[in-house]
Image (cartoon, rainbow, N blue to C red; front, side, top):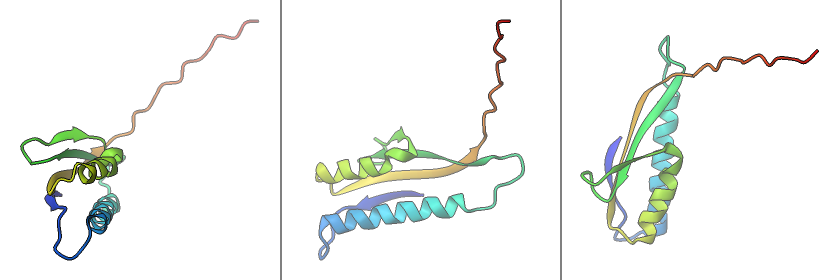
Length: 103
């Protein structure tokens, strides 16, 4: 999803538009996570970028998307850019370190 969201609407208050945007983002992420996972991949991961415009967008974690949308609402922006791209994720297997037991 690469999209510029408008925060202004002629009939709806900004709070309702923000909630609709958050719902669309949540629905998109759920749809991408439910896609078939190919062999060799552990899970779907996401590359996210957020900014006032596409040129000024900076990377962020997926858990910070709602915070960024709320911040855009507080700054009274008319629009913002959000990019969410699915990528393969791999689990990192940690090796167990055996502790020496005193006898």
